[in-house]
Length: 287
Ligand code: SAM
Image 1 (cartoon, rainbow, N blue to C red):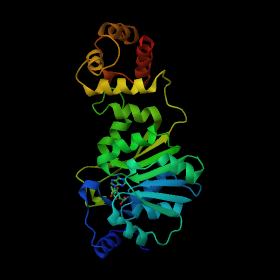
Image 2: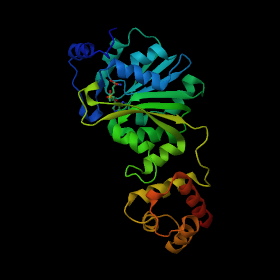
Image 3: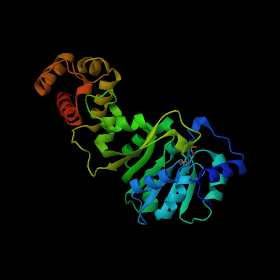
Image 4: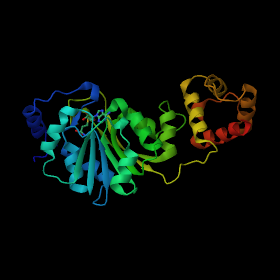
């Protein structure tokens, strides 16, 4: 089968099947062999790996993954793409296509079943409208994971990587950095896709840590505190947390903030992950 990274081959397939792009599914297909090669290098896929691809589209990146991985499982929501994938991936016997919404699929069970519980690699050019739920789902559901190498909106890649003091810093930054080491691998301009997205893109690799970066007495409380802090960005932490239903009085909280950070008016956006963990443990102790 012809390499779909070459634009003419993608156009031929789209014509052959009279395919209509569905905006609601975030369909922007890659048409750049150079970018595809670089994603493969970034993901470091080997013949030992089971790779899960989210949203194979017409199978462009899937072809590259099949060449490098032991096995590929590609999860695609759009049923109109399934007959196309059968055609474009017919040369490979190491791929399974699942027609399903990735947010509804039990990826943990799938990884355990097909990879004997060993960590899998996720590689994808993600549908941008569900980037955050996909990433959080992968981390929180306990999928055995080695790494996630994904194309995302450039601005979202920046958010995952950044720390206190930047306006992109928020709950996603802290969650990603709690579970993994993020590294931006490359930027990708709109003309590498058909149709062209309205935003710039970037490939980011998240290497899952064996253990979360910080230890806390109550992980769920840590994330409640983080969410409450950033829900009301312009408020002080004291107001953000009490409006966010965190079980501690304003006076107790002020006392903790002075003790930990020497500042009762500090904002959430000034705290790093270790500081959020310290705050969580103090609040937990009062519960
Ligand atoms: N991998 C292809 C490529 O690089 O050319 C296509 C990437 S395109 C940005 C995103 C793909 O994700 C589309 O094929 C879209 O139909 C699929 N998709 C969207 N929402 C999905 C979901 N909830 N579950 C699984 N696939 C989804």
